[in-house]
Length: 120
View (tube, rainbow, N blue to C red):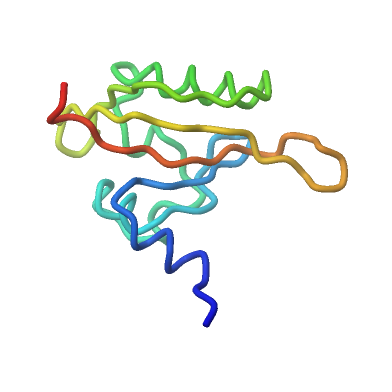
């Protein structure tokens, strides 16, 4: 029996997502939907400014830019302020570029983020 990717992604407690070059969400799992208090339709196509206080969560954009512009994978802590509640959450995030199979051109980024707020 094959288990599809969505079933796996929605079964893990980590937030998992993919974004395009503009930073817009193209794929999220159920954990992201819960964190953002939004359904898939309310997330896809939007960027982080809809869900995080970007001025206070600036490292989020810095990490994304590093992955997109340098093609680097990052594994580090991010402190994010949830826009809706003002709550600070700390994540250990893993981000890597997504490349077009045909040309190896970077077309986005993806990765999981594990909440570690209670460990900090």
